[in-house]
Length: 519
Image (cartoon, rainbow, N blue to C red; front, side, top):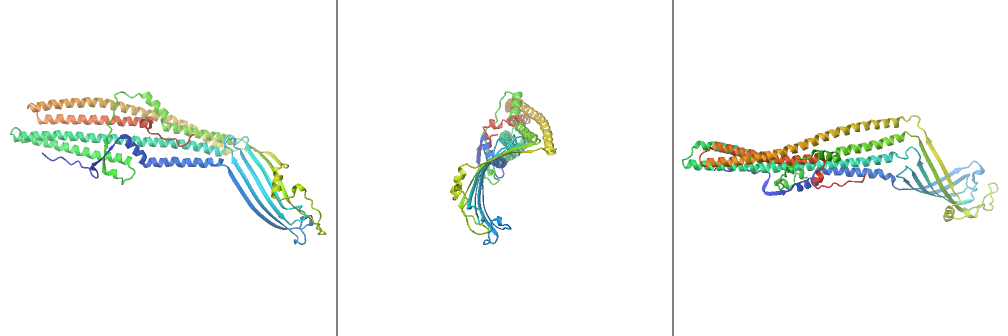
């Protein structure tokens, strides 16, 4: 007997098989795929952009400490300077202001609480108090009444970013489904390659058995040497088919490894993958209407276009609002406190001091100042409007017109995408139906070829058939089995494509993708 051809594949150790289910392959692909990781990073980055935009509504606390020292010459005796001061008035102000402000999430309003403190020291002879402490506390509120009340640039940006984040989420899901579908196709193709290799190996075994019988027949003087040449020719052809089938196993295996391994130096590259799942078959036809309904409900392209229309709605609302006049209400309510240490006034002509004119309730330090502030005996109320009428406002009108044109384009794109989905789903359902019928036909053909080969073998055993006819029957059987394997594989691959077309891949494979943020 001639030796068996070597089926050892380059760079793969057959003694280290790696059993792999389809779900394990999908899980490894989702965990290790570089495209999935980049898509995750895109979503995370856009989340941070949204957080950044929403940061405008955070509380903001502001401190403004300041020292102001001034020495000013005075040209009049009423300026408060004396001869001893060289005709100048020196003033030192130490101020410490603070404020707490916040932008409102609804209505576009803004409030600002402020608390300001000041300590003044001066050598002016007209001051009744020195080391004067003054404080003010109050709130300022600004509220748009027309433009920017329902929507402004900040709220527009946040709404659009939320929609963009949802679009990225839809893109991430679509990419995830694409990876899963590619793994499914590669997995079933490797399954076919391995089954086909075994099929070709079995066919080679039949040829070797025929060769053994011919050799025995020739040795016994019952056969002609020409029959050996006939079987050797067929044996060489089947060995070549087996080697090509083995090569295709490597190609299919490397394709699947590329999808599930993240590192080209991973040790699994030297292992042989052994799919443990077998193609499933359901003789029940797929319902086209249900598939179309699922696709129209789930397809991310339609969801993305709907989100883009939502973005366009935001733009339309914003640009319509910008064509309106701007009317803002501004209101301020505050109270003040004052206190200081009394000084006797000095006559600038005589230089003599007189009795202090400071009232008792103003005499004291910083704490007296706070008591006066909290006593609420002083107040300041300011209410006003800011009104702005744009004369032409061409920018807002042009932006509004552009947004309306974009809406028309989006409507046309939705119709076009609907036609594309209709085509893809119909083609996928037809592919499944064709594969289903091919499986049934191939199984019947395979069974018929098996019966024919068995009958031909019986005829050959009793001398009523020839080697040529027996070889033909064997080739017909191997061709029928190959068709059956290919049809079963194509049926499983068509199911994966239908899941991709209807966007049901995640549910069918129990994969859950968490939504990054609530819309």
